Structures are given as C-alpha cells and as structure tokens.
Length: 179
Image 1 (cartoon, rainbow, N blue to C red):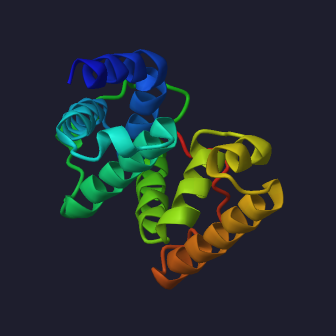
Image 2 (tube, helix red, strand yellow):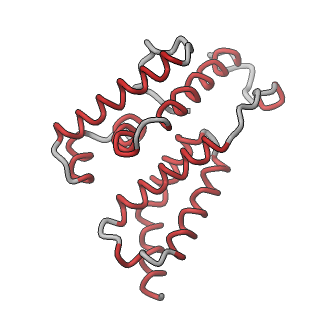
C-alpha cells in the first residue's frame, strides 16, 4: 500500500499538470478538471489492478480522456445564459464571437466523444496535446504511419459527424481546439 501511495505521488508530480491541462481543454471548465483529477486518482488508489498496469502514464492519460468524455456525455444540453458570460468588454473579439467560437468547440469535442476510443486517444494526443506522430507512436507502441492513419480516420469520422449534425462546421479546421 505504501508503494502504491509513492507511485501515485510520483505520478501526480510528473504528470499532474499535463493531465489537468488535458482535462481542462476537454471539459472547458477548470473546476470540472479539478474534480475529474480527484476522481481519477481516487479510482487509481482504490484499483485492485493498479500493480498490474504496465504503462502507468498511458493508462492514466487514457483514463483521463475517458473520464472527460463521460462527463461531457452526462451533461445535458443547456442553454448558455448571459449571466455565464464573464468576458470583459474590451477584448478584441466581441462576446458574441467568443460565444460562437466556444459553441463550435463544444460541438467538435462532442463529435470527438463519438469516435472509437483508440482513434479518439490519438486525435486528442495530436490536436489537443499537440504531440508529434513519432511521440504518439512511441507511447502507443505503434508506428508513426499507424498513428497518422488512426488520426486521419478519426478526423474523417469527426467531419462526418459534424456534417450530419447540420452544424455548418464540417469545413472548419480543428487545428486550434483550445479555450
């Protein structure tokens, strides 16, 4: 048990900030990212399979991605009220433009949540974490070509999903999917 606690503390020190950033980008809410981080580490500390995990970093990243998309699915579609807009009036972009951009980002993230898990993981690593195909391939035990192909298929699936939603976003690029 003491060994597990040490591994969790080491994992938190090494990967805590990147995991928090990833969760914040996927949920678009810092408070939700904090809660999901806590949930993730509680699940890890209570897991009976913890000692059998071979690649803890990859496992935790995958678990974080799954938690974020589970949270996104659990949220009901609620209308964004004006009281939730806390943007200063002096920004270069108007509040309306930012709201539209945020809604487009939410649609893209919802579409990513509908893609199968391996393709979703590669897509998130490439476009949200902005990792190279070589790094992705090393982390997943695949070749860079396989990682690129998975990401390409995920991109096509996401475009199809967005196109079928009649959202008008099917031609939008998703290179910059941050808040």
